[in-house]
Image 1: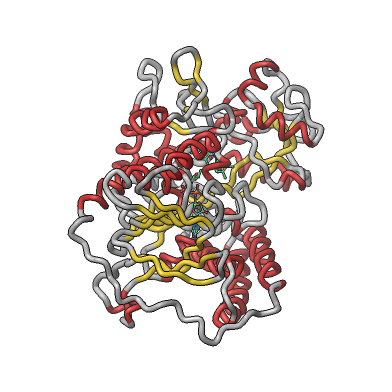
Image 2: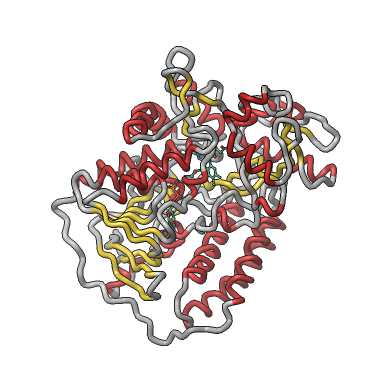
Amino acid sequence: MLIIGSGLAGLSFALKAAQSARVAVITKNELKETNTWYAQGGIAGVMDLNHDSFEKHIQDTLVAGAGLCDTNAVSKMVYKAPKLIQELVDYGVGFTRKGDQLDLGKEGGHSENRIVHAADATGREVENVLAKRVKNHPNIDVFEYFFAMELLTEHHLGKKVKYLPEIHCFGVYALNCKEGIVETFLAKKTVLATGGIGEVYAHTTNPSIATGDGIAMAYRAKAYIQHMEFVQFHPTTLQIPEADSYLITEALRGFGAILRNSSGHAFMKDYDKRGELAPRDIVARAIDDQLKKRGDKAVFLDASSLESSVLLEHFPNIAKECAKYGLDITKDYIPVVPAAHYLCGGIRVDEFGQSSIKHLYGIGETACTGVHGANRLASNSLLEALHYADTAVSHALKQFDNLDFETRIPDWNVEGTFNNKEWILVSHNREELQQVMWDYVGIVRSDMRLERALRRQTLLYNEVEEFYHRTSLTPELLELRNLISIAYLIIQAAMARKESCGLHYNVDYETYGRPSLSDI
Ligand code: FAD
Ligand code: SIN
């Protein structure tokens, strides 16, 4: 089995698959450089049936999803959460405890405390534990700094895939980044666990690896892609340029921190009666509205009325990061703004994580499973990664033994390419694309802005395709090409949706799905 990506989705799949098969994990950077590593708040799950219920978690997920969730998929994921979280505990993940129980935090859109966490650095703890197990596993080979470029299908056997009733995946071409050569990885089953797309925007909570490579590859191979218009903007990232959109976890608001504008007014209740704990799309839009109306650069998180020692115990990393910029979170207001955070759409998969291409699975943030609908509920992402890794492994292993390898795939052809001296174009084009997406395809959209974005995206596409076909490959160029495809998919999906719904808010259309704010 071939797994692309070493975040929670990829590593948990690898550990389970390796119990019965040989597994290769390809990852384009060092193993731990993933969105998973940066996760703060935690993993949602009903762990205390005396105070919570599966029905409530399902209901909260559906309400956040604004009418577009797949209820069956949500229900399966929610019921399996306690078992999946217990597996992480058994692997040795050190979640924060309160006495002999797991400590349960709260975040926006959750009606109960149900976020299992490791202080305010949950992802780091989970990734460290799983990465260590994967590296030491005798059935797993890890290929760091290998960049998966193209999915291998009948196209590479010289067939016109658009006329085929079924397309099959045979593995990938991957750039060995250290050697600069392209290698062929053949596999009976290929799993895309390549994470998110935050880098397509100028401001994002994501690390720079989040360039949507898996989605772009799957799109080129003619897989079905869905719900790309639903990009989640996290309401609160540190508004200090050197902090590079550092996330201030929603758990801080769950703990009692208040959002204030520059006059000190706590504005959230003016927008939604759930105040600071309304779903993320509502909070991000409220902040955007405050910034535009008032001409301010930031709003402020105020945690000063909370008990200092408890605050510092729960949020040690946020306290440390803020202290770097002279902010004491027990006293000072923390300046925050929204930034691109999460993609609800992606490669359309079924309940087993199967894409529309045979033997190709999509799991984690790269997949569109239907559990998030038009807006993801906080801390349901790590849970989704665990759930789909689990269900995809069982499915893939069932059919594994009788499958043959496809061996006729030709080597990558490097003829006609040369080492171009114009590399400045790559970084410049990336920045230009990010700014276009931020300005025209952000929290608030309009038909005119989307059309403008598409015109600019088309220009960049033409320039970069030409460059790509005559230039030797680098990870930077491959990422830029993928980002341009991701931008196209987001803009097209946003243009096609003639309504405002969940995370997709277009001022030219009515809101659909959830009651408007004034009805709540
Ligand atoms: P990732 O963890 O992003 O892993 C993707 C992997 O794919 C990486 O190893 C990457 O290098 C590799 N890759 C990508 N392209 C290629 C390629 N072409 N070739 C080879 N390898 C490739 N969610 C929650 O549920 N709770 C939280 O508290 C939470 N907090 C968050 C905080 C931050 C700051 C961020 C950024 C996200 C947070 N999220 C949270 C979202 C969550 O972390 C991610 O959605 C989740 O970790 C995605 O896991 P993944 O395994 O799908 O992808
Ligand atoms: C956060 O900690 O606020 C992020 C949680 C999430 O993305 O689910």
